[in-house]
Length: 298
Image (cartoon, rainbow, N blue to C red; front, side, top):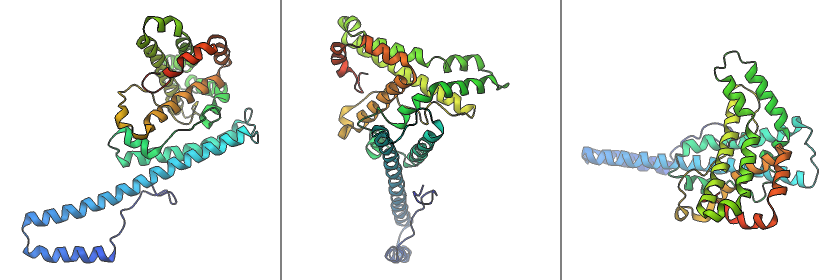
């Protein structure tokens, strides 16, 4: 989409020089074989497709940058305390909607960009924030209880819901998944003493399960036309990571951003998470597990 108009990007018109060259080629076609003519037309088509993709990529970069800028503006205002929104969801949603609009437009153009790999996508979008503690997604954890109650009410009031009981169980289970991940990280001296791989796998699996559960609750909320817990879903690392293809570490940084964001969201949503982490994750253990919080492990 065009960043200014919101319309889909159009293939640019040929310049006068390109028009003259096309006419020259078409005149020359009289002396060409059918195969030569096909090659000429194919070349023109390839050039126009290239121009179109470049336009789409520009839009992806533009909206990704806009998304990051909204996040940074929000973070700075929270840090300098010029915004106090913990008890003001209405004003918070102004920021949340702006970030969501930029992020969703980026995702729309991402589909048209048809990236060759996840690594190419992440290099173009460059989605990562150095400090996640005060991002919009994390801050929305302060409104967890209200949003959860709204989702539950929508499920209960939907007479056509065939999965009512299952959906209710899912919506009310996020804290359980969050605590399971905290316990997995805390178990450094236990499981880690048996096998480093077993420990890393357990941390990663409980973290991915937590992210999947949050994403599922968001999907249920959207299905029932109520505000989701967070305006976007988050990515797990349930795939093979090839460090050699991740030039610049953009995929690694994006994965860490999403994973850390979900953790911080849960700390805002559940007071028990912070208390449990403080009680269980001693300084010694926290230092020991730091290396396990990267893409390939946790």
